[in-house]
Image (cartoon, rainbow, N blue to C red; front, top):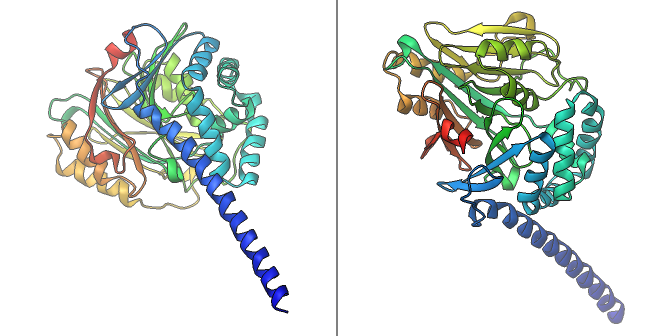
Length: 387
């Protein structure tokens, strides 16, 4: 009896040791993968040679420059960030349920038919250069959603009359959320150069500005009538990248987006030097909102009755609007930063960008929570797209 009990205890200890070893190995893999991604912020991979594909840093922000055709830009992305892309996939496999990953891949493969050929070429080149499966990169680029807020002020609302547009990017990427952000500058052989504040592995992004000064950012919508994903549409980050490469005004971007089929409901704010517009986008319908008294605010809800099931007031939107009205006529870059801080989603505010299209400047805070608290780094768009 004693021998039997000892035998059982031994088996239990052996089993427990096996579990500990498995968990330790898993944590070790996760640590290594996480370190590889974080090293995007730390490794000295900079190239000082201008007009060449490269990764450079400004105040610890990684800035990736890509040049040429879609195939060339995809190959450059996959080569320069090969280690980080591979580690991102390892982390995803550790952090997310297998069935969820399989569902994203399946949806991506179904929706691929809608993807413009140039983006397919870019993704395939990135996959080939990085060694990450094309289906995985496709799923990543076709699925992301985000909670965000935007504010535009111009004319009589700002201190100098120039237009300012702020955008919060609120995300929850579990344990790696502070390591995935980067800025991608695309210098395409055809179309406008773009500067996108984005995340590792995406060929588009949720906040951007092009060389003409057109800026744009989206917000996922919660109260729309569409509760399912439209796999005959495209994700907004791809569409905004597409529009950024072809459009030069808020009106042009709004017209472009209104004629597309969309995966999920979104608000998109577009602004140039003279005006800001907000387009509410369901799967196949859209409504445009203009500012009132040179102010325009949006978060994650439709305001047009034909697009929503129920009106839902948003505390963040109210907070931003109240601050803007209180400081009407005196709004500056600092005031815009304060407004975005007040309107952040607490606990997940990973990126904040203030666009100044008149002067071709952006102020960026990223990879920290809350990003809108700063500090902000000013970047010169004309210099970035020229170098």
